Length: 358
Image (cartoon, rainbow, N blue to C red; front, top):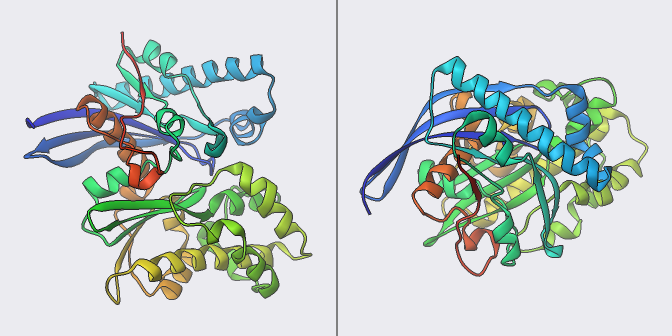
């Protein structure tokens, strides 16, 4: 295995709808081991109509409208990458795009990450790889989470790597395999209720901190069937809308109590996983994603899990998923698998992604 160096731009748009994250990293594979430097990064906010379409609007479009928006959003991504390249004066070897998840029902072999990779390539004139989940799902896997390969290669010194975005997902080493799965919805639910009062999110958990836990609702949330399943397993917005929102709204609670109860639920589910899999009394827990900036949520996770919580540099918090998608582009170029069968449940590791090259 020869040593290589690859410059890759990663794009990440999460279900929490807080915008598009873009970064360029330089990856080096030396003696079979990967390392990286974060060259530059920035975020781009979405216009309001995109927040609606990427949130729930696209799911209800006609086939023609959906295909048209797939192309339109792809050109939007391409323009942002072109701006990014010009602003920072970079020219990557590859652009690696997650797209934005609209449908995720792997048990039905249904998935779609919107944002045409061909449009990104057309605008940037740089090779683009996208659509990372499709092959894994067609093989019978979950197609997610995709972050664990990066956790293993780039953040392997921590016992657990937890990402908190629209959903929380965790990865950790178990013997010679990387194990990972989605834990629960987090910001997807929190932001949904905050938007009802004109806020994008609950800054530092200040709203939830004022509330009181409703024990009956907390017990009902913790008793949901998903939490009794063994991994590999993943979550999508369909599950939240079908089961979580109706359950929460069946209780007549103030916003503060509703959020306080949901925070406790999300923190408890993390704690259950950490305690069940820890190999030492006080394991290290690296937390990234937007939820790592939520002071109250992190307090609850630290107290309930008993782990040594590690909050990294703010750029790593904000851009870790984009960094890992940049890595997926580098792995694609290096002809190395990005989907791990131990994580997704597919019959074997596979190289996800579709390449568009001019």
